[in-house]
Amino acid sequence: MTSGFPTYRNVSSMRRAISAGLVLFAAYGTAVAQKGPALRDAPPSTVERREPPAGAGKDASTGEQFDRKLMLEYQRDVDMARIRRAHLLDRTAEMERLLRDFSGKYPTDKDREYHYYTGLVLSAAGEYRRAVESFLKAIEIAPDYARARNSLGALYCRLNKYHFALVHFRKALEINPYNPFLQYNLGSLYFEIGDPANARVHLENAVKYKANFGNAYHRLGVLAFQTQQYERTIEYMAKAIEFRTESHTTHYYTGMSYFSLEKGSMALASLRKALQIKPDFFEAAFDLARVHHSYGEFANALEFYRKADALNPDYPEIKLAIVECLRELKRYREGVALVRQLLERDPQNERLRRYLKNLQDQRLIENLAEPYDYFTY
Image (cartoon, rainbow, N blue to C red; front, side):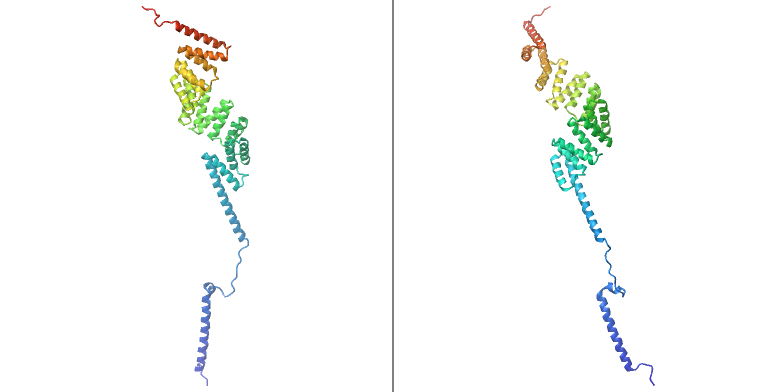
């Protein structure tokens, strides 16, 4: 009868089978470990290979193009900033070089600033026709470009084309009505064409929007002088001097206003300052002589009449004034000699003949007079 328990032989066979299975399992485990964790964790089915989405390469190329375009725009802005800086520092030669380099690197057909700065360079070089064309090109690109219209208006004023200048100044002011420089330019243009009412409106706006605008105060002072508002003239010119925009004419108008207000000493001080600033200022020399003459200061008057005569020898009234001063100073011999010189140029001048006779008579009276021929009591 056979027993249900395994015999020795059966047990030995089972042990050999189990050992073989363990060896195979160990070998499989070693292979899995060598493949790495991704393979160990992967499901037993085949792993699917995924392709990149359609257009991914095109998107990357577009991004690179955008970056290159952005960098080009940035470099363009940097180069234009250099041109602006050269303009602010009044370095025209440097600005010309930078514009030339700029046009070689970038398209400029639609660049308003390029044409604007080119116009400034051409204007500084005296190439006015090409400058006008450059400013007009900038305005064509950007009709509301107030800076280009202002510069074009100023150039037209230099060329005495006031009707063209007026159009561009007005348009610029429509675009930027609170700009004091535009107000000043338009006011100055009205001043030049003989429209003092409009000139005053815009010049007053200029000092309203820029309280330290010395040039505008000066121009207002000239307007006040022309309308015989002498106290206003002095006030406006004092503002111009305060804001460091004084010139020889600032002191000249101040001096003549003081003279009209019968303030002789102050008039002389201002006129001397004008002549000090501009030694060849004929009007200041002549009016200094006139002020001294009006107060009977003939020696001083003679000094400045002669200075004025040296600056403008073709002004006959000065020579007659010199003759009068010589007569008052009893320097008859000099007076007679000067009148005879004048008669040689204009022998039929009856006024000169009267002057000569008067001087000769005065000289004779002086010669006949005895120093001690007085009545005594």
